[in-house]
Image 1 (cartoon, rainbow, N blue to C red):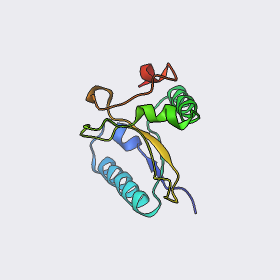
Image 2 (cartoon, rainbow, N blue to C red):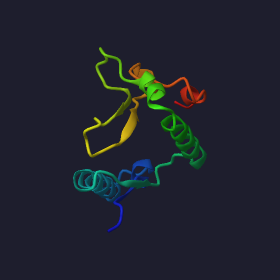
Image 3 (cartoon, rainbow, N blue to C red):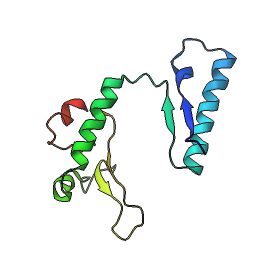
Length: 123
């Protein structure tokens, strides 16, 4: 079984013809199906430069290698309308993932780590 793959190139074309619209709808349908059946998917032709993705991955690996008490400094604020920041599944949960939820930089909701130092400028 292969990882579902979504091609975003139709969203970056200048044409607005029926074929482009069909491809956009197909991409949306793949995302819906992948999220409901697999929980994840791969994206291709997204126009994000490889060096930017590599830097983001490096910063993420650095952050998630920190001890729990350091990561918890980035937990969502108590009165925040959105749960931006670091969180993880409860200890009793079989799913042990942890994550740093972020919104658009100008949203004002993000709780970003001060370490690694480059994290804030990357955001």
